[in-house]
Each structure stands twice: as structure tokens, then as C-alpha cells.
View 1 (cartoon, rainbow, N blue to C red):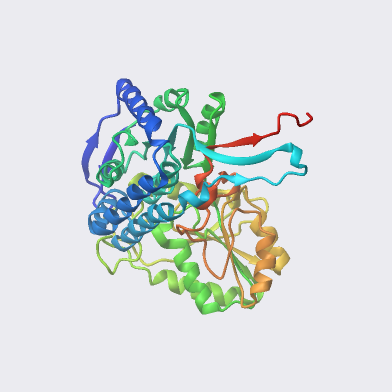
View 2: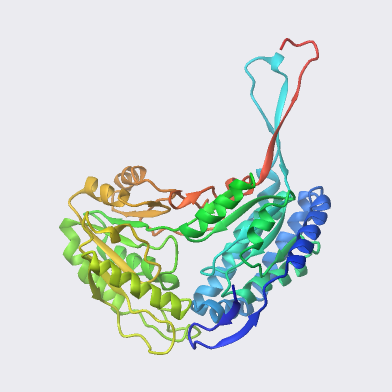
Length: 463
């Protein structure tokens, strides 16, 4: 695996980084565990100081971090700044709430003779984080902020195309005051994953990535009897009921499918529109997509960024061509994009009938799948006809109706009148082929801690 900074807008490879050696990985493990032995006993107040400092540094140096993210994976500068702020908010959330979230819990018991039972939450060791390129800071923050706050330490294997973003978080946490080795980025080679997860000092792995990567990593973790959390692919349904506010809904649909150039696991990938408003919706949607402007991601007027690499663009086009072989009808709906850079002109895909396997694929880029629904029940059926179960959205003027529909969609998250979004104080995760486990809030901070029962019982109590 070659770790390299290649600008998706220019195609220029700016810097490469060698893989870590076996010795470097072993040294990182030893250092991380040595830090854990003291960090686990550090007070929540002291840990909170580090989290607060990390958030403050991200806010102070927002332009520096944003430029680096734009340089390495191509997202617009405005989106990179928003991601930097979101990452700061995650650190600040756990600085404020970690102690409360991990407070001992007194358990109600049926009989006083059972004793005085409490549940305490204790850190377990090193968490191995494997993260993707599409949100190079947010993906790190949402695992290290809760895990460091809980008293664990973290080793990171980031995507090979964002090595400088990964290194930036090394510097960030050092400046924030985290003991050296408490968090470390490793340019790990493939064989290092099994080496790390087989180490008894490592308590588990958190992966965000493709379904294929999740299958491999979960298998390695299971072999080592290590806990894993998996945030994998998604093909979110964006349901538009017949009473939706059409103009506002269309604006959200255009945004929901094309933010971050459509390279988001919770993008609005499948638009499911009620028959009564289908034609008008499609007309407005095409118009909205055509107004997107592709160009230099550092230019404030750019609203459609290049994909993360030319390979990503080529792979997406090959996937579209394969879908056509299964019967999909594909229409180019976006304005022309620059010849320079890893741009992909937006497309609309229809005729995704029950015999077309492409309806079950995740298109990681600006390709929209479009479905016509006869009624609410049909929309729910189409939404659930997917191997994925990450997020989703329902648009309607009747919010009670929207909630009723949302309750019947098999995913980890559903929003009514908004595309699936990410916030510091809301949980994130899915079901089915989208993975398992949750990140953020109290659910995320408790994924890799030991939930230990302590029960003080009268010595004369019966068994």
C-alpha cells in the first residue's frame, strides 16, 4: 500500500510516505499500552482538558486543516472547513459529557438480599481505528474523542490517500497535551492489521469503510476474539411523499446526493418519489443538478468537487456501464465538468426493476438512482429492498405520517424532512450490510469499555 498525497484536482502526486516497519508497529503498541496504564487512571477532568484543547486548536487553525483536506481528497474548501468544525464539536462534546456518560449505575434488584449492585465502565486498552478518506478528520475525531475520553488509547491506520491529514492529528493531539503515544498514526501495511489485532494489549477495532473491507477486518478481529464495530456502506433511501413541499424537498435532494461529490455513506443515493408528484419532482431535480458548478475546490463558487482520485472516477463509470448491462437507463443530467481533475458528471439512473441487480449496489459518487412509488407502502417496500441499512429520509408536510413511514424503514437512522446528517450529539450507525455498533454520544463511548458488575452482598445472604 502506497501512502501518497495526490491532488484530485490537478492529478499531481505531491508527496509519498513509506509504510511502517514491523519494528515501528511493535514500538507503537508498546508505547500506547504504557500510556494506557497511566491514562486509564487519569481523571475525567484532566482528559477533558485535552479534548477541549483539541477542539480549540481545530477552531484556531481551521484554514490550515481545511486546505489540507481539500488538497488530499478534493472536497470543497467550504465543506472542509465545516468538517473541521464538526470535529472540534465532537471533542468538545466529550469534554463536557464523558464523565456523566460513564458514571457508575446503581442497578435495581428484585430482592435486597441480592446486594447493592452497581455497573461501572472501565477502559480496556488500545483501540485500533481503521478509517476512510472521505471525511479525513471527522472519521478520526468520532473514534478518538470518545475512546480517549473513556481512558483507552488509540492507534490509527488511515486511508492511503490522506496521509498528511492523518499526520495532522498526530500533531493536534500532541499540542493538545495528550501523553506521547496515547494516539498515534501508523502508515501500516496490510499485514500489520492481523499483527495489531492479535496483540493482547489491543481490545478491539473500529472500522469505517467498504463492505468488503469490513468482512476482512471483522474476520481477523473474530479470529483474535476482539470486539469490532463496523460502519460500512450505505444506499440511503430519500422518500418523497405526495404531500411534500416540492421545491424545498428538491433542494435537499440535490444537496443530499451531491455534497462531498456524492462520496458519503449516508448520501441520498436512492430517490423514491410518489407517483402523483414524480414528473414535477424529476423536472426540478434535473434543473437543480444542472446548476451545480464543478471546478477548483478552493474556489468559493464551486459546488461540485472532483472525486477523491481518478481511479475512483474510473471505477464509478465502470460500475455505471455494468448497471446498463443489467437494464439500467442512464441519463447525464449535470452541466459539463472540467477535463482536468477527477471530475464525474452527474447522472440519473432509472429502470432499476426487480431483475436488475444494480438496484442493490452502492454508487459512491454523483449517480442518482430514481424510483417511482405508487403509495406509502410501495415507497417503504422499495426503501427496504436493499442489502444496506444505514440512513434514510422521508419528506412530507405531515410529520406524524413521516414518522410512521420512518418507523418501517430498516436502517439505523431516519430523518424526516432532512437528509441524513452527522452531528456531534447524535448517534451514527446502521444495520444489515451497513455494519454494526454505534459511534458518538453515550453509545459510542461505551463500545470498547468493560461494563463491570460490582455487587456488595451480605455474607449471610442465601445463594
